[in-house]
Image 1: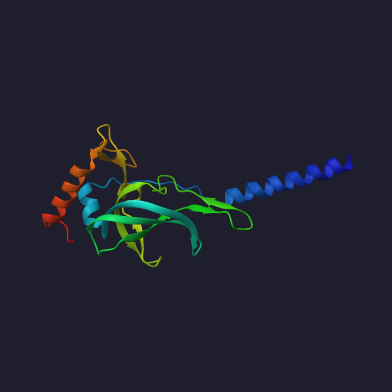
Image 2: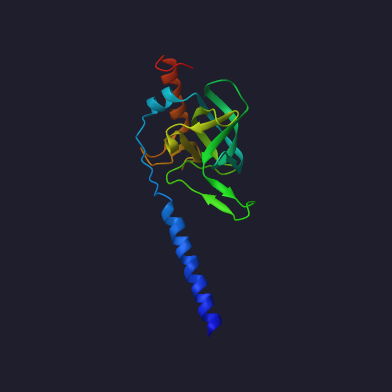
Length: 182
């Protein structure tokens, strides 16, 4: 009976410690301010179409992030490159003494093999790294439409699916019209 009482006491202490640890972290919320395609084109340092080749999590200072390597197949704005490193908030560290996973509601994500259209901004904290402009708004997935042609799918909803060819034409016309510096 004494062993049960001691185990119960330890369990209660553990639960109290866990509750205090959880309460010490402030609740996080994400609010997205809608950006038009014109806003995204104008604010982006780099605009590319490509395929996610790999993802891996790493620590940048005290932040756990996921680095996605994207093979560029078409570039509309920014310095020419064949690959780009996209820094996504959150990730998974299974190598730590205690495995850690960090997620951000509404954050952009990518999976190996995924075709993407990206509006990116330079991220000085990571060498040659870029962040998605407008949080998830600047990352669009490319998927096959009913007719077999690629369509653009927005991560945060929006105007439905648009043919990639039409979307590319619109972005190029915004760039060519001089509304945005290339």
